Length: 245
Image (cartoon, rainbow, N blue to C red; front, side):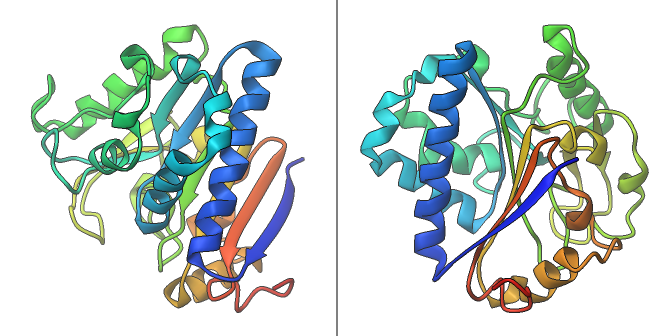
């Protein structure tokens, strides 16, 4: 059963530094244990801060970046290089500065990719990429998620049909947040990760974080759990309605 841990720090900058330090340590430990690490990235303001902070951390030099697999939890189904794509933002914040193995950077398909504007086909393509190692999904050491103001994670929104998807990936149509079409990991896939980290900062996240941690199962965030540990990494404003804050 997954152990849930809540970490609360004073503000968003300290939160980004905390998450960045934890991620570097987790990657180093995974590489020491089995030679490589596998991380699922997320998008959003705080995720960008985390990646930018890693660039400044001396401890990040201990990582063999050529032996890190990078995946994404979801993606806005837009053309490659669009500034609103999570991949584009991650590359600008950190990835383009790292000696990564391009074959191990698993970006979700773009709307001008091989499947054109067929988001369902793009999601199926990503599912096939996840399965290239022989298992349905690879072993994720860390799967990071931002938490939306409505309690959504990845592109899994409250009361949206995509929540019922049981495959490894899905296309999200008619998203309540723009753009309306996205590609996402499903909740069952999220729940395969060794550790799930839910990261949230700011007063606009207070209600969703409090409700999810208090067990409101209407919120997708309440269902996002790792197989061994689930971390809620919060600044004080986001944690205002959390009993442990």
